[in-house]
Length: 193
Image (tube, rainbow, N blue to C red; front, side, top):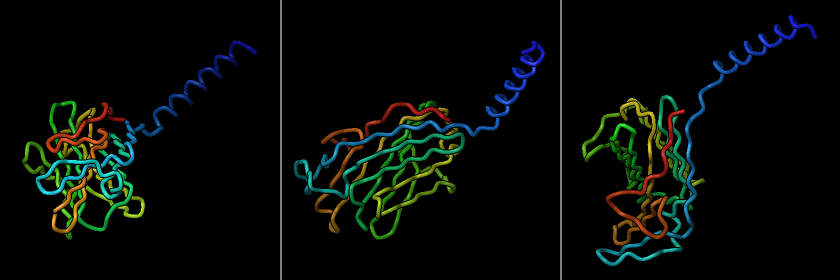
């Protein structure tokens, strides 16, 4: 092969690689956590917390954190999502030091809120989806509502109760058989894709 031909092929390959690299969509940062099965905690009234391995409604099976250039996607899957009287809670710590809480409550009506330090954060573009058949609940938060972080750490928890709130079942996606109601265990850092 002549020197000119190999130089032309190399230049062409470099041009194609450059076009392919700039045309390819950015990869999202993503972390998946698979939680232990049958590690739900049950509390009756003010009584002692005990393991409730038969409860499926609050048993987190999988938690996925996805961070793109524009949004944070948090998906939690439980073994069996009840029709009513359940909650998903996500806590997010950004690389700027801010901590946010996202609540999705289903007790007849639906409450979906973003807050930091107990103060609601307006975020009308935030969306949710619930797939009862798969037991999957997802929250999508635009990064503009979180101060445009470059990286996050996130935690997830699920809760279910009966109609009179006499029994409460809870599970932290990153803990086995334990839950701290004031703080979920956060996963590893996910960087913006």
